[in-house]
Image 1 (tube, rainbow, N blue to C red):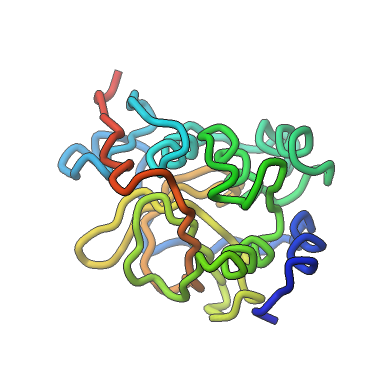
Image 2: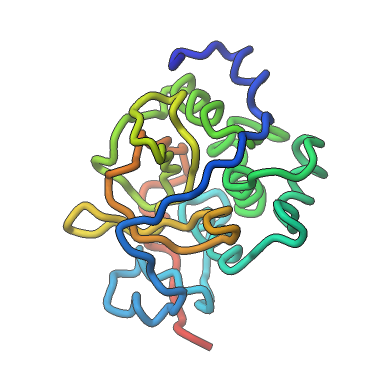
Length: 224
């Protein structure tokens, strides 16, 4: 089912997906922010970089996800993200936290309306989040024309339906060859930076962030 009603989206929003073993991207990118020194400002979000950001922008969303880099689980599926999600969005307990991470980052960056559709809303079940983007007219299938701040959804079985979605991340940078860098929670039981291509992409949601050129407002100050 890809044409979910608003009631169905709300009913499924906080379901915990069954565990799906994550597959690797086309290659993993190191957390070392110096690897991005040759990239334009829109792609320079090293884990140790400081940034000047504006709340409610794509830049703020990416920076909030960068702040999670390296976060793990202890015990399984339990960390600061799941605790905050349960406290501020829905008391669903511990579980796969890729979309919980996106939802909590949206809170931290002033983007909860743009990313999740309203104050107090959030998602743990990735198909429901994608269906909400589609319901709001903010969805496109495939990986064409990705931009930093896009919410990109994956299917490890290479399915192309919203119901096939199993994972989600935030686009950090897009390269000339069409590949892209993401920040993803709950990948290998951590939050990691990944280098992806379109192989596993079902589609993306494009939140209505404030302003058109906000990502360029992030100013990397290097490693410090």
